[in-house]
Length: 506
Ligand SMILES: Nc1ncnc2c1ncn2[C@@H]1O[C@H](COP(=O)(O)OP(=O)(O)OP(=O)(O)O)[C@@H](O)[C@H]1O
Ligand SMILES: [Mg+2]
Image 1: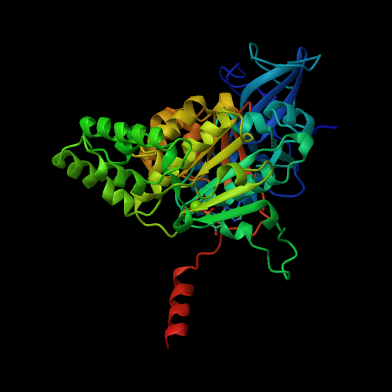
Image 2: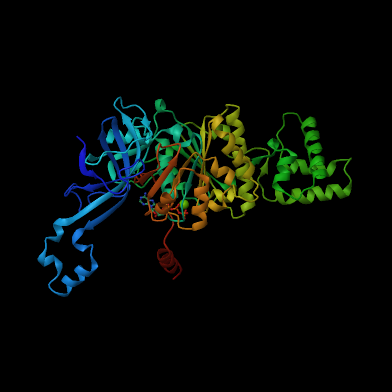
């Protein structure tokens, strides 16, 4: 039985198809003094079907307090409340925006072409209606948390709708991006075979997800052990298989290398491949081949080696890759690429451009299962300006959905993120953001975000998120659920860190 909360009222030009007001019943909500809230969904029974709307604003009125001169007059004497029953004349009015209606066969949501009638009952939208309205997958969706103001609704999002056309998680520092990502990882790792599982690769810039791979402390019963589903590799142990690289990859790694030098390098690579068929090689092998090459003059050799030597000194260009993707990418499991021990941004970008491209190609050749590549600090790898890893990430954004290679971009500076990549993300999870240029950038990248929604984003508390785009039929506010994995919170606050330092150094 739906819960009645009020009655539609008539006021100037309203109800109309864009807006209507309703007066709220007293004591509609026993749990709280606040009867209705902005953002709640409501429904009305109209002759053609069920009318659905969202509460956009709430205000109170009281006719005893509308005239300033009489309020002042009474206040100077005994006070207006002692003479009149003012509290009986206080009303709460809700302003609602119609979203659509279901006709009697209750199939699809139709566009509103008529206003609701004054005098009609207003109900809180019921569970079934809300699940259908938002387009939730109540059987096998990923449970991200509760719908704000509707605690009975678990926001369970269909896997395909959520990530096939990529996902962006955007918020200022400390708003809960990594926490939300942990919840997403837990949901993905917990899927049953029949629901469809994928593999997860996390580019972990700060080592926040490393504890996922560790057995939790037995004392904490709330934390679930996911360690047997998670592998971790630290960046000092990561290597690139040089055999998969062409001269153009090196041109990307060293942008000032000339096209003549690239041609020479390609010739060297081809020679090496011909003289050592099916034999993997490292950058060091190519450098020896250049040194021994009889055709190249001394000047060209020196110039080319001048570009390749700094790359060789990174100690990542081997004759085999680590981690071996063909062995480590497994369905229903996660691989964490922990970059926390590497400071050089160039070094990180080279590693990620290599692994992202290898994953993409292996998936295209159907040698590995569908996967989600999660990029923390995505603006470091796919910025609006230049970056070694930018091209491959934009390729994911444009083509990945066709191959089951999905992307999750996480960033605290959306304005610095590639517009191409961001605009290809079908779903956005947006948490608190206050920077005006970031807000503006987000608005430009998603047509579903209105100016009102934008105002909401800057006031969101930690742990609340707005989900917009393919994943849901309407933008929804979600209170992200509590995580149960052993992730994050490995950073001490400044006071704790200072105390620990004194303790260990005294
Ligand atoms: N849904 C939530 N429930 C409970 N606590 C949360 C939630 N979301 C975030 N927090 C807490 O807020 C703090 C910051 O969260 P988190 O590290 O995820 O932020 P962030 O957006 O990733 O920040 P940064 O950009 O600095 O990486 C953490 O201590 C975390 O425990
Ligand atoms: Mg974070």
